[in-house]
Image (tube, rainbow, N blue to C red; front, side, top):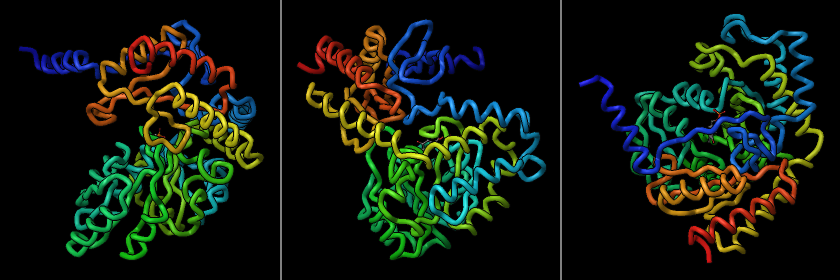
Length: 393
Ligand SMILES: *Cc1c(COP(=O)(O)O)cnc(C)c1O
């Protein structure tokens, strides 16, 4: 028997369960429309909330920066890979977020892997929302700390867990997604802050889907709730609304200083490239210049969600532009996604383990790049496929 036969069986099992990822190939920039496997389709999949992934000012900034700095950073940040544009980006991000300091990483995933193990270890405890992102879960596991999952978005459950466990550990950390990426609901950060304050525990929020979306001009969840100076650690990503790639930790300056000394992905993996850093800087410029794109994103999101509900779709608990279309079983969600694709709409089915069993869905990602006409075409396709598959009347 071959040593990898079990893998073939596992893969076959995924296909039978409707859980196999069929990854499409794009041959166009990210925008409202994409060319996917040679076909022009409406883009309802990407996290390019503000349409910055292919913004002319950002592309221009990248060209100018590469003329000055070339492309590669050459080394890890702590050896010879920190260029002045990396530092400038961190200063600009800190100012944008209204915090003392910021440090950037290669991705949001890496930001979590860097931060959590640097702050807690074997003798410590982490209180983590049950539905936190995989990168938080992995960061928690890497730290070796005891992980206690509290009920999703429940400050009461968090407080119970703290009461029961805190005394057995040296230090603690509370961590939550800001916006939950599969449901689009928002963490009750003011209540989490009250609990963190009462027990004197560090509070960390991962605002990957709130950056560029929530708060004034996209300044994120802390700004949205007016909690400036109260959340010690704000993780963010530049791969979503910023339209580029990269992670950031913004907040207390001592924590940022510590991450420069002890954040392992910072110390052992090279810096983001010149084009990444330059593009992120240009994205901050655009966000600081005007709230127009963020406002447009919200207008589009409100319109699409309201029309979907009128059609009879269940859009779950979303409070943000993330629009889940709840379908139940994974094979139905996959069938729905394939039919949408035939109708010219690219929207992915999401099933277990990304969401719980029986909670499969199509997740529609609305963007400021969509015109009203684009949204109407999408709604028409949803109405047709939904009726054909018996999801709506
Ligand atoms: C997308 C996401 C990440 C990962 O961000 P990348 O920059 O793509 O690595 C981390 N945390 C949360 C909550 C996310 O939604």
